[in-house]
Image 1: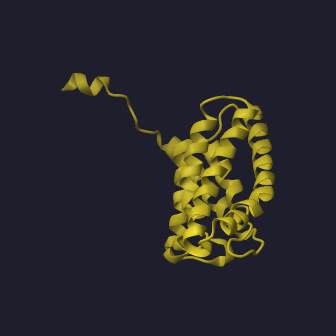
Image 2: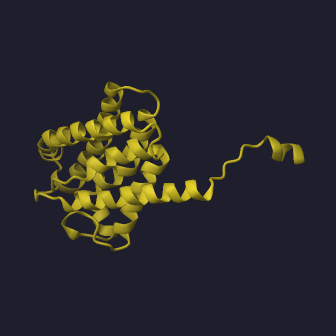
Amino acid sequence: MDVAKKTLPDLSLSSSAAASQVLWVTAFTFLTVIGAKAEISHYPVPYTLQTFFVLLSGAFLGSRNGALSQLFYLSLGALGLPVFAGNEAGVLKLFGPSSGYLLSFPLAAAVIGYLVHQRKGYVWMVFSFFIGLGIIFISGSLFLQLTVFHDWSKTIMSGLLIFSWWDLLKLSAASAIYNEFSKRFKKLPN
């Protein structure tokens, strides 16, 4: 029994490393809240900066912590804090027109975090962000189809194409920011 204990890896974090991770996860949660408040009204889903911070949370925090930051964000909204666009909150927001986008945030951050840390290079990072946005758009469009439009042409136009230019801007900005930070700082908070 003592031999087994000696061969198992130590998975515990030092208290300072754990505190640092909690701080970064919380910071990206609240950056996503701020992103929701930067809103341009549009029916049925507004333009926001949330996905910008989803991309960055996965890249900076890695797969697990990026997903945790977005789960924390969704949890705050589900508990009734007005963290979503339009100062909305509550579990019902997670079953409306925006739900597919919102519910995909943890998965998108996890996939981005995984992919970004598999290889180095600007093109790979942009590809990773593009995959994350794809997850968000596929999920969002599916929920829009089920909850609002029931017509694929309207769904694709109002749930994907209308946001494509906006999200390409966010992807470009997130790529530039992450690229610059990763050049300047060898150790990022993941």
